[in-house]
Image 1 (cartoon, rainbow, N blue to C red):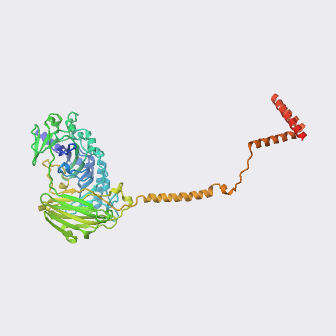
Image 2 (cartoon, rainbow, N blue to C red):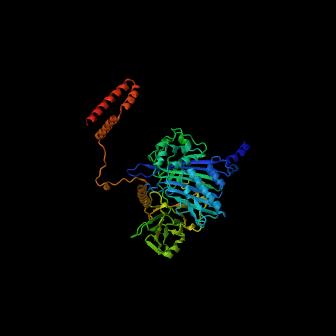
Image 3 (spheres, rainbow, N blue to C red):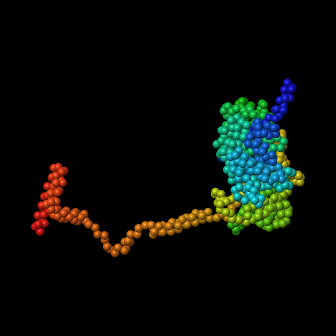
Length: 614
């Protein structure tokens, strides 16, 4: 028996491991609004780098992701997120971080001397994600021109942000790209579920089959797919949805989970439901309680819940109240007083901190059509009742601001800064900008609302750890949601993204091409019509040249009289010999011919008698 266990142990360790979790947190109730709760599905698959894995033979690991990691080992980790909606302040403090609306892709690549291989790995990554999530991640695919400048394929003059080497761990480079206008719908959920071992047919993923319509109408939906390849390969998929329901009891779809005969996912090592209580959680059999500060999390195995023996014990409410003391970042493009907002603007950046002292590093990119005026830089430090305001070079020095200017053509302007934020302090930055004209072909639909500019990136850590505050692959790939497992330690530093912003830019007259085409077509039509009328058509005399003359025509009675007169003259000219020939000819026709000849002879006699009298 011991030998059998020893022989099976390496095989068991070589198998993939799959875990699934469902978090439920009630949201504060709003007057005259339906009750809501936050549901979070988490799925994680881990696999060892065995010989079978390296030869693209996978157990539970998603085949598209596994083949990508095998083909391009330089991809250390990535995180792709699709978000629709925002967290509302009426729901209370945000329980964990959500990515900004649209699509976000963060990639960690191993530094290599061959830039072509790195570009190829990134290109295949965005193509794989575009197919696996049914989204336009290929809009983040950079094209390397002959001059070596990296631009997005949509020719918007943007490029993926590159973290400074001082911010990154040694040997790793990070690329960050956003698409704030990317729509998110349930079509992205279908291919995402196909990456799971049990899909939408078994386990916690089967709950989503009855929530497709609710997810489509949810005020907040965030879909994440992340992977890393360090000591082992791991894929993490999560879905955050704000759904309606009664916070005093279980949701109806969860109560009927067991009644619908949903089978347990046999591939899952662990399948659990986690209910968040504001105080002390109830004591139930075959469950465990996790301490989360002043609150507790009740962990229920899915198999026990499916047996239907626990649903009646849950009467709630469970809560999502939690305060995140992370710094706040506000970024916007304001207008200047007395100037058009389409040609002039003022870049605003405000960093505030309510918690302990933090060291914040900020990285942003301005498109080529936004030209910053660095001499107008103004920075204000506020610490309680004390304020310090600096301008120009002094502000640049204190902010440790570094920038890469645009070439004036298509390349954007990158800049980064580092500040110390004390508890309760804030830093505000104001920078005047000029807005250049854009080719009308580069405007998207509904361009009157403004031009979409991608989000910025910032990194924060404890003030005493600022010197060693570099982000690693482990911190980069850490989940955004709650970390309740022992092996998931929250990193001291991780990346955060701001939302995109709308920038009003000078707009051309979009109707001018139509006006030019219409005017040119009209002129060509008049010219061609005139030439054709003069050269190819008949020219009847104009009515003014006829001078009152009328065309002479015969009346029908006149024509009849003329024909009668001509007939009489013809009969009078017939001689006796002619009449004999006519008689011989008509006699051959029988009685009708003889009768016709008699009429003809009578007519001749009458005509001859009348003419003889005259």
